[in-house]
Image (tube, rainbow, N blue to C red; front, side, top):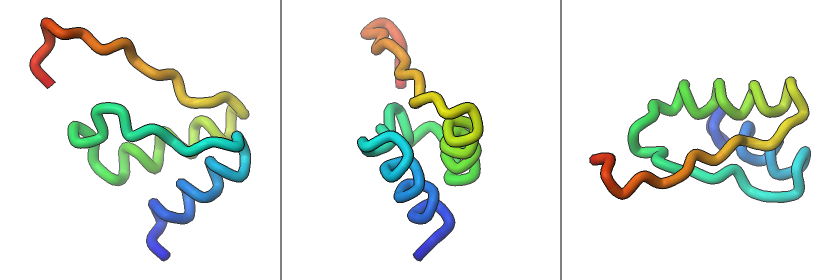
Length: 57
């Protein structure tokens, strides 16, 4: 099991839902792990960004 897999499982266990890979292709695995760790430490779910149709993702 990779470090990312472990963090994804920890997020699901803590919040009862999966972490959403919103625009995940723009982030490195390390950045995603850091976001999940921040959520776990603050005990707050991830904040989802609003989709901007004018932005080129």
